[in-house]
Amino acid sequence: RGLTRARQETSSDMVEKKVIIAVAVFLVTGTATTLLTKFSNQQESVGINQESHPFQHPFLQCWGLSVGEASCFILFLLSNAFKKRKETHEDPKKNDCSSFSPFLFIPAAMLHLTSRILIFIGLLLTSASSFQMLSGCNLIFTCIFSRIFLKKSLPWYKWFAIFVITSGVVIVGVADLLLEKGNDSTCVSEDKDPVLGDAFVVMGMLFWAGQMTYEEKFVKKFNIKPLNAVGLEGSFALSILTALLVILYFIPPYFNILDGDRMEDALDGFVQLGNNPTLLVSFIGTTLALCCSLIAGVSITRNLSAIHRIIIDSGRSIAVWAASLALGWQCFMWLQILGFLVMSVGVLIFNNILIIGPGNPALLQKCGYSWPTNSEAVSASQPANTLTRGKENSSFVDIEEEKL
Image (cartoon, rainbow, N blue to C red):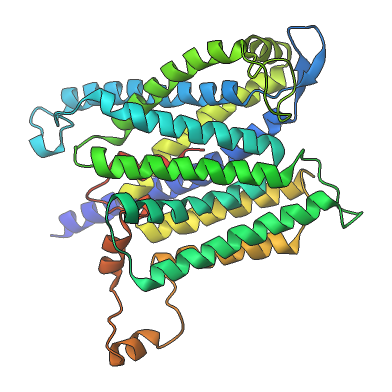
């Protein structure tokens, strides 16, 4: 018994160390993905016309991240081959042998691609911290779509939480509006159009929520491993975006958002990457950071709870904001911090982590209402928030929140 207990303690210590490492990797790489993307947008390099100009290629940046996601399929194949060599008898329930069509991921890839393009355009116009904070509004659209298309009902306190999150989004937008107007002469924004950038980010989250809802309705029923799903989705997105880069080369820009004579000049972007080693390292680093964040997210989902994921995700927003201040990319604004805190409170209420007022559950029970338990709250929030999936049923949707 003593030997068995010692082995269990050793195994537990190893799992704990792996979880700590996964949390650290997730926090660092998730923060790095946003910061490196913004850093790339601020770089200048000599382009195909032999003139130096800013690197503004959101479609090409999306293409680079799609390459990283598609590489997850290779990791899945290698992992599968290693497991087959190591294990002679596998549990058939754990195998990724569910019969499904890979083309099931084409609509999800298109929604995800649209979301990412809008987000990258938004990052050209607004600050990295505003983007990271506004990314929490995807919960609002996911809940609405789940109610419309999945016919899921949510308890009243979750709708109140959505209202709180919406208020936080509005506060962050007002902060960027005041910054754009330049009411404070000591705080000048270097971003092109923060308010328009915020609008693009919110629209991107709308398509992201559509992707979540589609996968909830059509794909979740299959037993698909996370790396396999992300790899397939990334492969389709890479194929679509490669063709799109060719088409956009011949289309003039219809907005004053992007500089140049083409909607996306991928050739100019590749030339700029080759002429600026710092820009190239940042571009490749963004892709590698995303891959590491996806893998770390899988480990966290399987070993920890939704509460940990929410807290860590909030820490990522704080890290991006602090780094942006330290690098001089933005000014300190109390209103922006207030908006972030309001959104964080809304997320905590939604996940039943923060109960509205002390003693409210007992009071509500006396009035004839029942306050959900933690397990009930997790069950109710599953269709609306992919963070709350259980460890036993970890699927590809668990890591969608880690995508930029």
